[in-house]
Image 1: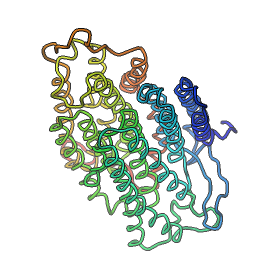
Image 2: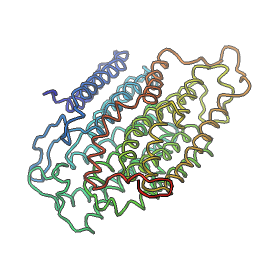
Image 3: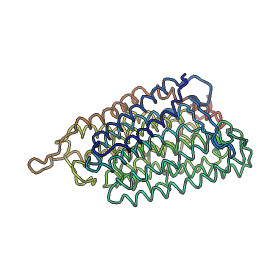
Image 4: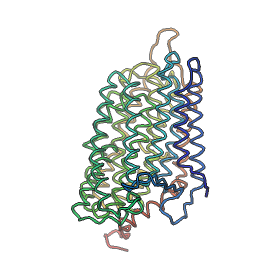
Length: 512
């Protein structure tokens, strides 16, 4: 254990880095990117220190805790802490942020000094908010971070995105604000039916301490779930994602889809299940139906896309359907699989978005029909793109296979029909990934004007891709460290919800 406020430091360091970047004087353009990268690496070191200090065998709900009175008149505290689920997501964010900074190295030219400073400063501020939203153990503080994340993302899309960036940024903001306002009603209601007092928003006090009618608690569940479904994103409140991801810079798309959207599924575990266990049981049939629709719908729409960034965005809608399915299956296997899926999806999506971004940079088009035969001129780029795609479609031996298998196994234990229908998503995933690869990378060698043939991945780009590829292999063959981290938190959640795993059955369906 450590006495250092590691969680606070993981927020303070990026904010200080953003201030330093923003304050750099004219003529120091070359320092902007190294300072931003160095800041994210320091944050990563702090995240690793938090992992080392975390005791998976502890019986406490949260560790590395910090609690200070903030607005006692309203029961609000500055309260931070992590369980295994939150820590796994924070570490994932801490790994992906320096990868994204390195990937975005040339997104803004040094000649545009002011724009460059703002770009990297916004990424650092976003990292601080990402840590805060996963570490908050006060419901109101969580809501503050939940809404604050919108600000840097809005500007990253609206100022640095593609031709339709302003439309995409505004759509993202309106959907997110609408969901956030609905959740705010639930947050206020929670305080009035909770234990009250100067720390009346603390999660640990609210679990089992909400004294409201069944109808009222169900409405509160709906308020939280709607906000998290928008963020996740789930069908039918998903339509902001394809536009936002397509118009974003690839690094922004990674942070948006790979990390920020996990706040939705994380919130379902932390607040929907733990604060409203009875309402969670009540809503499970509807949620599972929406999850299965998301799995199949996202995959079907991905198959028909001609814009590769839009295709990758639709694949994420399908993947988030799997994650929600495992959460509301309410089994230890499904819960562990969902949490592992959140981590694995972050890395697989990062690989697809960033490598596709490298491809688009070389040819200037996002349209899949504009490519073909590129494995003959950029073999390393093509190879890494294939590996990222195979991880996304859950090829055995790569990371996503383990999590997807656990989700389907855990769901089948209790909801066989939902698991069987969702398994169709595996077949569809093979279609949309392999068709995209075939259309962009295979075929006859493309012709280029003399001296204009695209170069393969540079040294910097290989450093971007390397940790992502390593994560596919390591988590594919040895997911045990992450599972050991999250399993106690999953078991605690199931205990709060009041469910146990179904008894094993024999071939006739009888309990053994």
